[in-house]
Each structure stands twice: as structure tokens, then as C-alpha cells.
Image 1 (tube, rainbow, N blue to C red):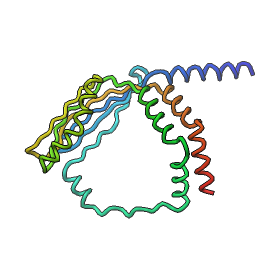
Image 2 (tube, rainbow, N blue to C red; image 1 turned 135 degrees about the horizontal axis):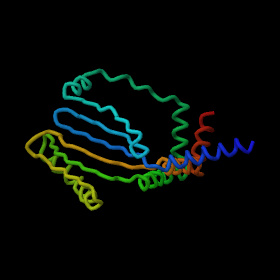
Image 3 (cartoon, one colour; image 1 turned 180 degrees about the vertical axis):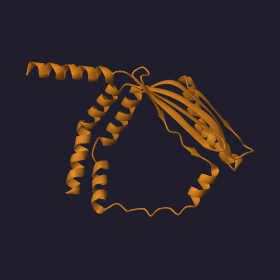
Image 4 (spheres, one colour; image 1 turned 90 degrees about the vertical axis):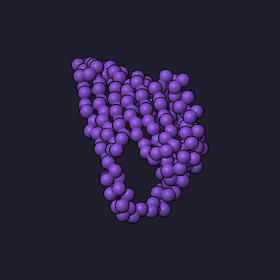
Length: 199
């Protein structure tokens, strides 16, 4: 019995130690005539290195998708609607979700981030208004050390650019944040309300 308990303790400690090692996600994207994306997932200091499949979508594919007939939307049943309303009306849930977003943001470390893009709409006025709306966020991103460059094109309708990002997360801390969210009183109340509404 003692040997089994010792073995379980050793396995548990080993699992905790492994979950404290950061997971690194590298993302690359390029948009010109088509969208090309690629990524890599690295863990255990490079011993685990998985390539993420990229997607390429050209203008022809976009046109075919836009010309396709949309699938009919399924209306949610009355029971699901009642459950959804019960969750939304649960006191304190919205604040707890916002707190979860802040907690997750603190656990995510951005090692590298580079974004260079150019955009333009049919109307130069729309281009100018859009750039005016996002300009403060660009300044804020640069002040936080992100390499962001976004330029408006008033004489051309297009969207092109490149993106490179490196993100590090520790699985153990993310799991702790999510567990604290699930067992929080506001989430438990929301789940109870959804259950009662579905009965």
C-alpha cells in the first residue's frame, strides 16, 4: 500500500513539474492575394515540436464560398433558450467572465509580436474613419512594446500584410485559473439556474 501511494505521489509530482514548463506557440500569417497561415507548438524545451497545418484561401475560394447557398439556420429549442437566458441573468456572471479574461491575459506572455498591414475600402472616407478608430489602439500597442504598423490606403481597395507572434503559457497556471472560474459562486449559480430552467 505504501509503495502504491509513493508511486502515485511521484507520478503526481512529475505531472505537476511537466505542467509548469511553458508551452510556446509560434504563429505566422501572410495576406496578399491569398491568406497563408502556419504555426508551431513547442513544449518540453523543444523536445515536443508540432507543426500546425496552414490554411490557404484565395479570392476564387472566397467567391465560391460567398456564392454558395447558406445552410438553413436551426432555431434553438425553447428549452435551450430558457437555459441561455437563465445563464445570462445569473447575478455576477458577466463580471466573473471579465475577471477570467483579465486573469488569462496575465498568464499569457507575448515574447514576440509583429504586425504590418495595409488596408483600404472603396470609399476613402470609410478608410479614414476606420483608421481614426484604430489609431489609439495602435499607439497603445506600441507603448506596450508590440511592433505594430498599420497604414491606410486611400486610393486602393485591398487588405494585405504579415503577422508573426510568439506566445508562452504555462499549462498549470492556465488550468488553475480555469478551475477557479468553474468553481466560483457566480458560475455555480449560473449552472444551477440553467439546470433548473431546463427541467
